[in-house]
Length: 118
Image (spheres, rainbow, N blue to C red):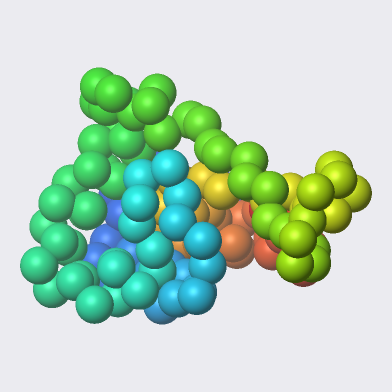
């Protein structure tokens, strides 16, 4: 398998492709950004997002360790949930990580995650 494309910087086209794949109706991650935010504001944020992704890719990132966490949130399965079994857990991750993993080259290199899994 040729993985040489993983060495190239991110392009605007591939990041926009990843953004188009982000669902707009999902829970916020620890960073507070959703797919709807990226889609609505892409023209304003694209230079900063591309710079951050390429700094991360090149290994220049100070503070990227803060992106290596997530939140586990308990959602009630029914009204008046009171017992542990009345909840289901979801894990939310930073939207930045989703942009990296949803890029066309990452999906082509590593395949798609099974449905319902991340």
